[in-house]
Image (cartoon, rainbow, N blue to C red):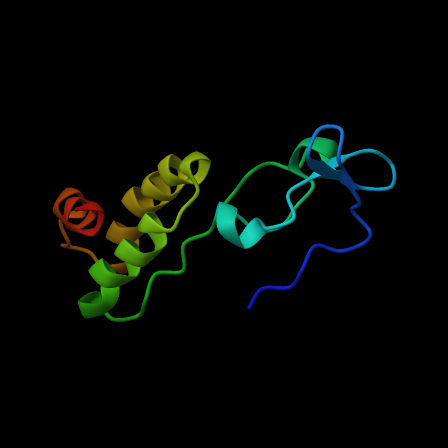
Length: 105
């Protein structure tokens, strides 16, 4: 069971959203969005994600499938770009396009 929204972010019945005490809108269920909690817009924090490829090539496809299928829409392109760069470094000789197609399929 997930934690309930904090009283630090009261609900505004006028528009159906929650806000910090200073009036900044918040997402109270970041685990459903698929990105880490952060003040992206408020603090100008860039939306980034980080792949942590497994050490064994046999685990690569299933790892990518899990990461890519659970990624927020705004993160998917970034993660694919990272994978295209990092896979050849970690696993020379692995066909990146085929691996990504299988993971996304």
